[in-house]
Length: 316
Image 1 (cartoon, one colour):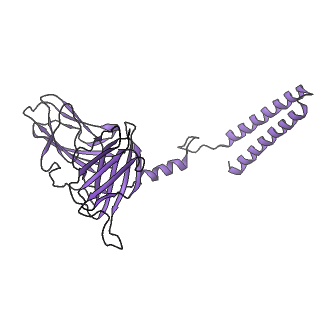
Image 2 (image 1 turned 30 degrees about the vertical axis):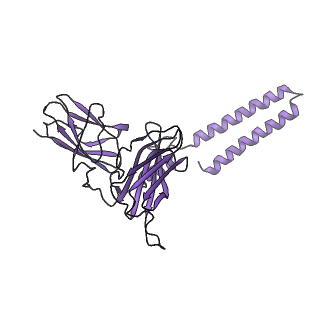
Image 3 (image 1 turned 90 degrees about the vertical axis):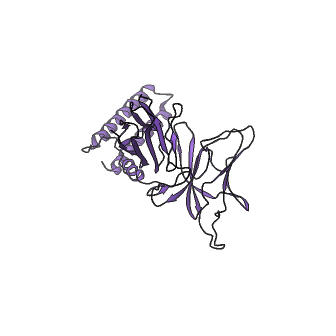
């Protein structure tokens, strides 16, 4: 049925309703039986029109009557669009524990060192907490003092704990007048300030790169391993995670983070027990989900495109 036919039916219903209202105004004090008669006629008229509309809606093969083609098409297009599409990032350049910055009774201030000098290019600044400007500020510190970061909000989402995660684009490109980027290689620290009853979780500053890389620095797994304990069984990104099963099955958890890499090695002296991978939030695993071999067996993983890809080399 065309949209014009629908409009005709709607107008017809509106006219019938208007006639009833006008009749009601004239006869409400004089002729209640006439009103009831008009009411019955109006209900019958509306019922006839509804039947006509239902009868004229044609069902297409493979579709229900509630199919929203625009929404479906738009959803398919949007699923392939992301501020990070086709891009990769380094590991977190901020040294130290950035998982949690506790709030204080007054303003909280934290200053942390960077693992490398600021370079020209684009950076991804992200954290869970409050939007910049909402009693929340981040500054870069160099030999000349502090500079408020100038960023563009790319994206925000809510994590499983109900906190909002903000993703900002920080451009460190040369100024046309000075020939210098806003943040020079003299920048050595990042400073975070937020107000009372505010908090910051998982602060990260990562540089965009054209391809995924294993970086050789003392903060990444190419240099030393990280021993997974019973109390903390979450895999650390960019590290070689050492898991001692002690003869029992051991479950380790992956917190998905786009374009990050990790490694897991079965450690200790007992060959028994499996290492079982599990992803927070139900993120799917492609490849192997367990290490079943002896001590020295190894798994390599990458978080990419909404999935975790794991390759296992079991030592027999």
